[in-house]
Each structure stands twice: as structure tokens, then as C-alpha cells.
Amino acid sequence: EGTGKQRPRRTASVEVHYSGWTTTGEMFDSSVARGQTAIFQLGGVIRGWTEVLQLMVVGDKVRVWIPAKLAYGDKPSGGSPAGPLVFDIELVAIK
Image: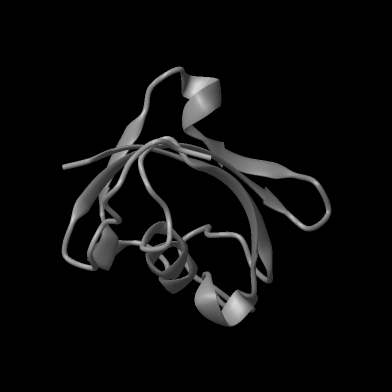
């Protein structure tokens, strides 16, 4: 559990560390592996992330299972992974 008091609003930017896997265990993206946090606008990420991050405080670390309809869908374009996804997310800061 984190020590923060505030939760990000839907319009906030957040700094996170994360790793994402398909349900078959294939890692498809990771700020941790790159060694650099990422900054995202909550309105610009998949719906599952928008919902989860609004429940977190700075310092929280969670593992979430996001259904396809809240991720990229079952048949995404542009190389995004299909189906349900698993993410480890750490909320580093609210910008």
C-alpha cells in the first residue's frame, strides 16, 4: 500500500512503473525493463487503466487482470495485444 492521500482524477497525468503480459505469460511492454518510468494522461490509456489508477494513491502497487473490452479488444490493430491482459502497476506520482 502507498502512503499518498490523493487519487488521480480522470483528467490527471500520472507517472507509473508497469509491466504488461498476455494471459499466456508473454510480456508485451514494461517500463521496468526499460528502466524508466512512464507518464500518461489518464484519458489517453486503455479504459481498464483509467479505472484502476483512479482507485490508487501514490506508492500503491497492484496486479490487475483487465478484460479485453477494457483493454485493446479481441482483434486490435497496430500490433496491440488481443484479449484480456495482466498488468503490474505502481503509481509513482500524480502530475
